[in-house]
Structures are given as C-alpha cells and as structure tokens.
Length: 127
Image 1: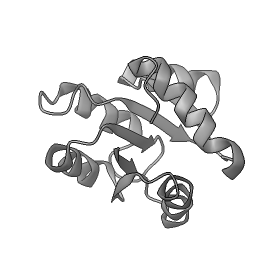
Image 2 (image 1 turned 30 degrees about the vertical axis):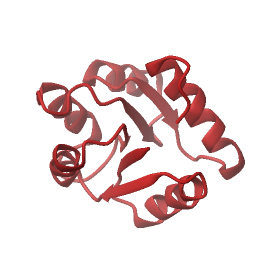
Image 3 (image 1 turned 135 degrees about the vertical axis):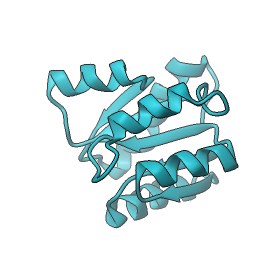
Image 4 (image 1 turned 180 degrees about the vertical axis):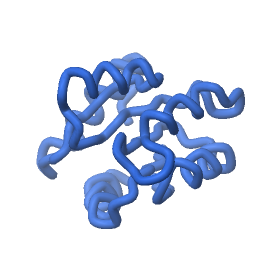
C-alpha cells in the first residue's frame, strides 16, 4: 500500500520508514502540511500518517484542509503526535482524523497498532 507520512522531524520519518519498509509498503514523505497536501493529490495514497504539531500549517489544520479537498478527502488519516491530552485527541477527530496514535511509538508494537486502527477505519482489510 502507498502511505504518505507527513512529519517535520526527519528522525521520526526515518523511524516510521524502518517500521513500514520491512512490511513492503510504498512510502511517500512530506516535511510539512502544505507539501503533504500536494503529495497526497499527486500520489493518492491509501493512508496518510500525519503529525499534529508542525511549524507553519499544523497537522490539525492540514487534516481539515485534506477533508475539504474533493480529490483527497476520503483518504484515511491517522494522526501521530506527542500531543496526547484529551483535548488534543478531540481536536484531531474534530479536524477529521479517522484515528489517533500517541508518540512516542515503540518499534515492536507500531505495525500491529497501526493495523488495528486501520482495520477500524476500512473494515477488516489489513495495511
């Protein structure tokens, strides 16, 4: 599956790449919300992993913009962020996120958590 990862932290992008690369996914990366929206329109991924806190356009605002864009609004979005207060989780869902995973993420559990949350969004289909 093609997965777009939108995160401003290079270390986090590399970490996610190491988790998902071994699963055989086609990964596309963006460093900010604006670039992420452009890449989503071009690449039409099956899933977007989106950091909530980024400079410029936040992940929350990026998610809102994705949901308003007819070409990409139906792509599942899972927010990945260190913001894990109840209000932050609510904000993610208000912005249009389908699911939410709090950072930090442990390597040995990330793929199973991601699969479980993805299945909740699209039904029984694994990533």
